[in-house]
Image (cartoon, rainbow over all chains, first blue to last red; front, side):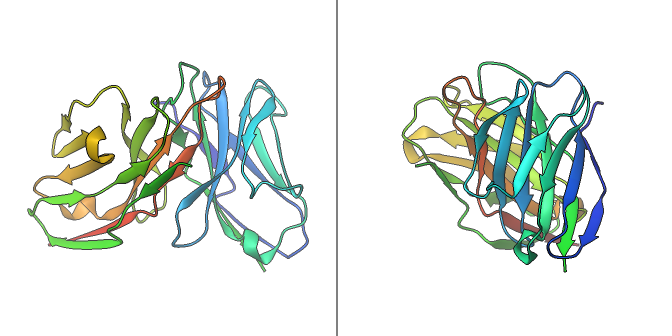
Length: 115
Length: 117
C-alpha cells in the first residue's frame, strides 16, 4: 500500500541553523501539507501546497518557513533560522484531488529538536 | 471560526470494556468533513474514518463505530470490547474546503486512551 515517507526521522540542530525536512508524498496525490505537533499538544496546520504553489498557510508559517517541490517526488519544508520553539514533530501529509475534504495521509513524522 | 473540542483528555479502561470518545465541532459552513486519526505510542498518525456533512449514517468497522449527529454537532467514536493495542491518542479533525482548496485539517486536542489488561 502506498505511503508517505519522511526523512530524517530525527534531527537535532543548534538554534539559528537552517534545517530541511523531506517528504515523499503518495505518488498520484496532488495536494501536500505540513503540520507540526509540539510535544503533548495537538496537531497544527502549517501549509498546504498544490500545483507548485502554496494554497493556504497558517499564522505559524512565517517568513522563516518555506516549502518546495524540487522534483516530481520530493516535498520539502525549510526552516531558515531555527528557534527553540520550533522543536516539535513535523508531519507531512498528502491527499488526492477531488471535490474537497479528501483524506490526508500522514507520514511517520520528523522529530526536530532545537538546542 | 472552526473548532474541534475533545473534552476528554484521558480515559482509562480495562480490556474488553466499551469506550466512547467524544468529539464536538463548530463550523458555520454546510459542507465539511470530519475525520478520526489514531496516534499510537510510536507517533505516527493513522487515518481511521472520514465523513462528509451530508452523510449522517453511522458507520461500523469491526470493533469501531462512529455516531455522527449534526443536531448536536458531534462525531463520537466507540470502541467495543477494547484491547490493549487500542491504547493511543485519538484525534478528531474537521476540514472545510473552500475556493477549490481541499481544506486543512483542524484538530482537537486529542483523547489519550489507555487500555489495561
